[in-house]
Length: 435
Ligand SMILES: [Zn+2]
Image 1: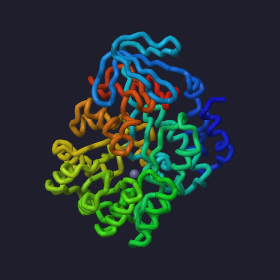
Image 2: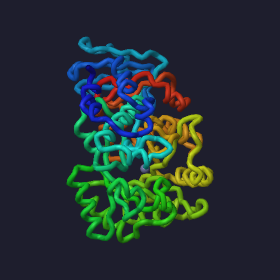
Image 3: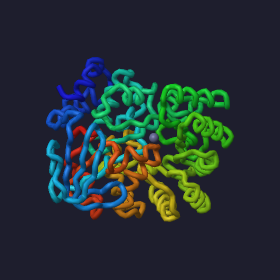
Image 4: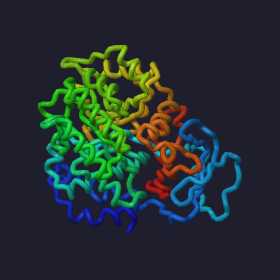
């Protein structure tokens, strides 16, 4: 029995949800996600492993041919001298056409959403045991695409923390978890259970997240598209409330992430000192409108803009409210990028059928084609810059001595053609091969 089926096996027996994918039997069932593990190669944790490829992107730049030495789940050496591997090492040479790079980081996912056309209904049909099973499968799906770290910005009942803490770290991506997002009574994603209004309740909500061990505090500052009755262009909290949340989160040592669509919500979140802005679409009731001065202010403030880039090729069209605004949203994102904003891809994976949990590699192409990044800038955005944005600079997002051995190997040169990022040859998580 491999590590993953061993880890997940107990959950499979409790799995009896009424989601369509389960009833049809064509969803993310145990057989489909156990497959890649079963044919994978698993090393003993203390064995020295050497990976070789014709090119290495280390999170900042390309280095040509190199050898990466892995031990105890970490990268112990990156050698570009052409030296021979240590004698005791197991050597995997992926050849001159392969590129080795840091595992990718998705700054905004929802493992609890199943990427169906009815995620809210689907979620309601699952009890927590079944939901945890689906979340694990979603996380494995991301890992197999080379996404070795995900930041989950909204779950139910803190289940993403359970995944993070109770499963062997090598079987799933590294999970940065927000727990249920803080929202107003009946507000956006209220069904996830994070309702809090007024200073006392907001302070209690942040304290609860800190006590439970959340990595980040997520707030629905504006309404959203997913929730019936919620208006994305309207703010849910005023500036004073946002200051309470951001200050309390920072005092607890946690960063704060703001879901923002309307311009007022964006401006208030920046003013209140949130660390990352999610979506940043500048929705109005009928379209999109961004004050150029606010775009410049975002760029100058250093706040991280996590943009909801990426859909699978030839997938279903985005929801009409997004589709009709897309050109204007992208124009503003391009403007922020040109103005020097720190930008990372946060796909919102799981939220619609076009965004399954392995969608992030396609977001890199979108950063190039729609935002105007070079392939190198897009690769940095999804590795070193993303790691820094979510508080993991150092261990994540780079191929360097001392970093976690979360490594992606692709065929081709993603620096020349970022589309090569989807030609996955191998994925390593904490030094163990996941694919
Ligand atoms: Zn989201």
